[in-house]
Amino acid sequence: MKKLLFLIICTLVMIPTIANAHTELTTSNPAAGQIVTEDLTEFVLTFAGEIESLSTMKLMNDGQEIPINVELQEKQMIGTIPTPLENGSYVVDWSIAGEDGHPISGEIPFSVQMEQKVEQEQKTETKETNTPDKEESKAENQTISDNTNDQNNGQSTNSIKIIVSVVVVLILGIGLFLLFGRKK
Image 1 (cartoon, rainbow, N blue to C red):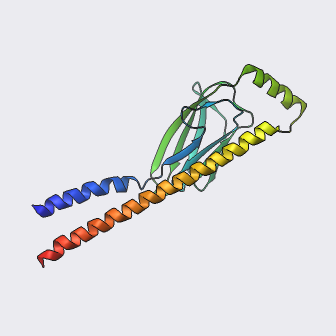
Image 2 (cartoon, rainbow, N blue to C red):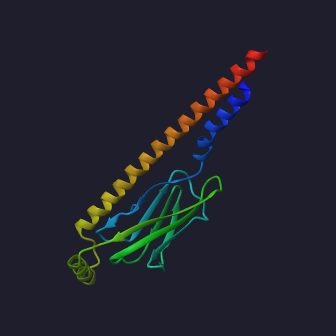
Image 3 (tube, rainbow, N blue to C red):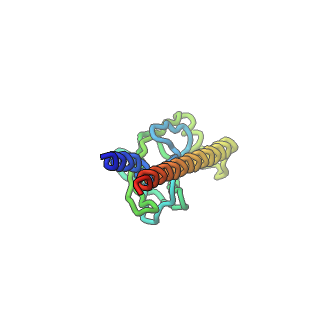
């Protein structure tokens, strides 16, 4: 009876460890529910593990798909569009195949709310020159910095999960050894 109880407890402890093996979304830019107030032409999704080439991303606005170019880079899926998004509500639908081949999908709703005056000035500036101004460069650098920090946080979280999993397996192994070794 003790052996059965011990095996049941071991099984219950191992289930969450096994579930963490799948690749998960760690960060996204824009984030879910974010209100974007600057020009947005790039979407970056960062995952805990490497993603396979079958992974896809769609940008939806009021049920209509907006054409998007998707590039995969190890743990990131990057989508770009040629022109900034207009004010409105959007959803990034993504679907990936993780390292283990398990399909995972999700969506990231966000909205764009830029002031009308800013939009008109940007359209005028785009017609006059095609060079980015300093504020756009600062915003892009901040986004890159934020993505790097988020990626580092995701990696440390992933490392902690691995360490916890190894410790749990070691404890269970020692417990089983002691339980079955004592009878001999």
